[in-house]
Length: 67
Image (cartoon, rainbow, N blue to C red; front, side, top):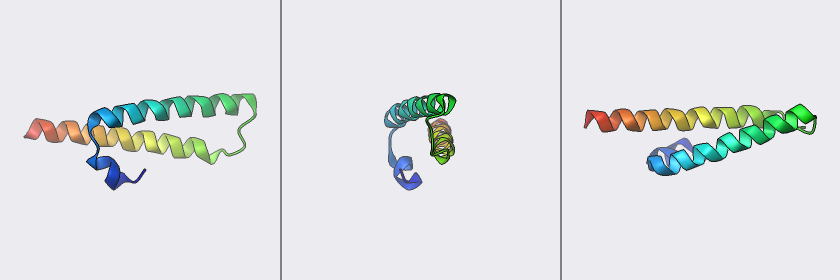
């Protein structure tokens, strides 16, 4: 999902999306361990999406404290 679209979403949606990404990361790691994962770039993509979501959640919390 685009970073601009994510910034417009509420924290509740972002938390749900973050859980989905953690589950996807877990499944990819299990596939990697069993030797079934052929597209290794997906691990990096999911890891970076998790970092993006966490950053946006932190920014939202910071902005709410300042108001």
